[in-house]
Length: 155
Image (cartoon, rainbow, N blue to C red; front, side, top):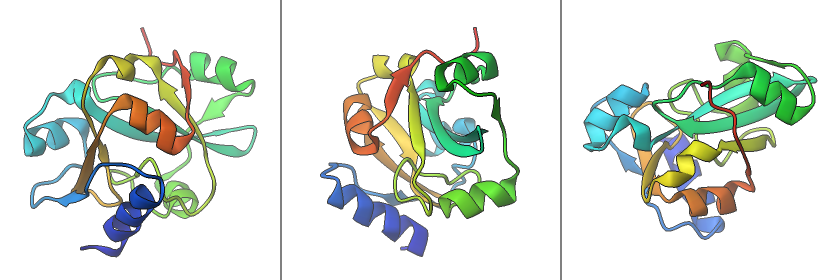
């Protein structure tokens, strides 16, 4: 198992999550690729997006079919939200773009989970590489990340 995926698996176990990291030969870098590789819908992919708000890193976890709304996110966070570059994402999370997991980050991140993701009984999230994922539920995702549920999808 790739060291990033192993780190995510260990963190999931530490937090009492039920999911097991699965490494795939197909890419899961985008929500579409992940859905095709897993055999699920794009909506059930929990995509991880990193932002900066007031200089602090924030992880937004949203349904794969949705775009995040910078105005809504900024209002929720109380500071303007911006997107860092790929190098900053890797430095802050320890993971490359396309593999950012909801847990196991290099730096503690505030987590915001888009309310729209809660409608699904099963979701899949990245597990540290663009080829690793794990299955979870929205309720478990909120619990293991300590995430704040908010309406942050673009209409």
